[in-house]
Image (cartoon, rainbow, N blue to C red; front, side, top):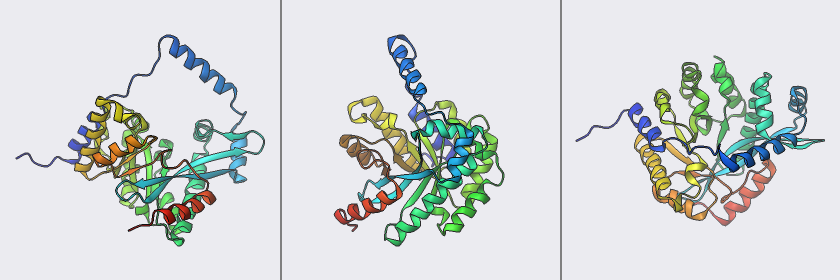
Length: 305
């Protein structure tokens, strides 16, 4: 009888199961069209610089919004992913794709992370008081992994709000760790030792060379929309999705499917044993006030038990 796989062997199989991401359309008319769209989007971006970003952080213009996560077995809301949203008083919404890299390039990413984490944990405290014990997921910039004080600083924020580390998960993409894997390993291991969860975000968008990530003790695999959306229609995609969920389950790593937009895909991932899901099929991101109002209404319609 074959023995149980080691952590590294199992994660290696998990990474192989996803295989390489679908190649980007980089040739022909489709690419030309995409380039035109990209140029148009870039020309429409508001003229934001580091000074404006720093001012926005000081003036609390950047706020956490929350996309609910659902337990697929109970249909109950079990957590939220906190997402940074900036509404500039003159330019309107500023996309995270614009201001997050700006924060990373100008030494403001730690301030941005603390801001969103503090707001998210305060909302978790409010939700708990209202009877909704939610876990909180937060995106973690790979640049922060270079700080040896990272786990202590994040632990301090959690302690200030009275939220146990076990209810907090930090998400990091598989690609982000490759350049400085040794540094990332130390920082992420310290976070796990403090009791925080670690999620391998955007799983399915990397390549099998990510086998080296087997040394990192993830507690969660977040399956990318590219593996989830439309899986009910495509056999090969279903096979990859099912393999990822099965191997993660064997390892004891929780699975979260993101980008769920179709009821048939929801039924499929539930059938395969995926633990949690989020996406527009369930609910788009909400402000803190909207979240509390929605939770009260949702749980009134879907009582636990």
